[in-house]
Amino acid sequence: MVLLTRKAEFSASHYYWNAAWSEAENVRVFGKCANRNGHGHNYTLEVTVAGEVDGASGFVVDLKALKDILEDEVVSVYDHRHLNLEVPEFADVIPTTENIAIAVWKRLEGKVPGATLHRVRVYEMPDLFADYYGESA
Amino acid sequence: MKAYLTRRYHFSSAHRLHNEEFSAEKNREVYGKCNNPHGHGHNYVAEVTVSGPVNAATGMVCNLADLDAFARTNVVDAFDHMNLNTLQCFVNLVPTTENLTIEIYKRFEDGFDKARLERVRVEETGNNSFEYSGK
Image (cartoon, rainbow over all chains, first blue to last red; front, side):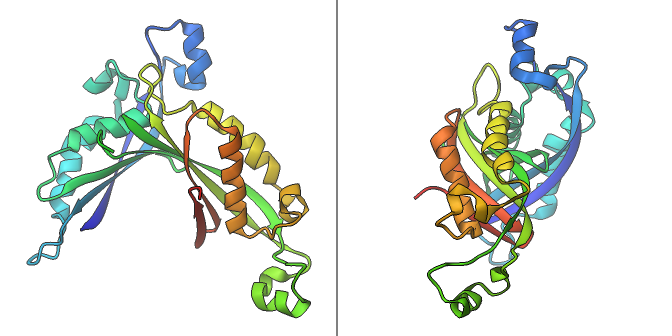
């Protein structure tokens, strides 16, 4: 088995807010991230898939196909969008880096032909990232 | 849903690799340039990985403010612009980056209880790094 990782980038805005809490509690827990006007990041997505190397092609997965799946399923939905307001899975889920990693996993799971999704890593910035390995991990 | 959160912290420190038990010649043989009596320095990066279920109310494995505050007090303020050899933890321990990585791991293991500690990875330069995940 070989692991293969493909990167993609998107830029998006978000804020952290739990509607069940008071404003004071949101500010206490989320700090600057609770600013309701939003703020943004250049995100880097790293998607790792696992599979056997095909004897004929030498590939774990067709990289162009993987690139197109990332574009169609994630980048085209998230890039230059406000995650809270424009991306359906974050209507009721706070778009933290952890939750973005889980959401990307759900968008990609089962969609990569011939390979298994191994890890989704989302960098919010170069010094902060979240990893998700699926529900069974 | 278990997720992993990793944060990188930067600090710059001096150190000298020297073992009092060794002869001067042996120290030079083992540590090479790193045995220079006046020390030298690095821009270190400590990468700390914690894990846990994502809290449904906050969307977080742990509050980054708590992790940052702990790292600031126990890593960045403790090591930044310091000579590692002068610190209590390295009085009887050569401050190699292996030992520095283990020291940082122990500090989180002993004092940070907001999430499970998975791993500490320290980059001494862009070309070498060290990892410790407990025993």
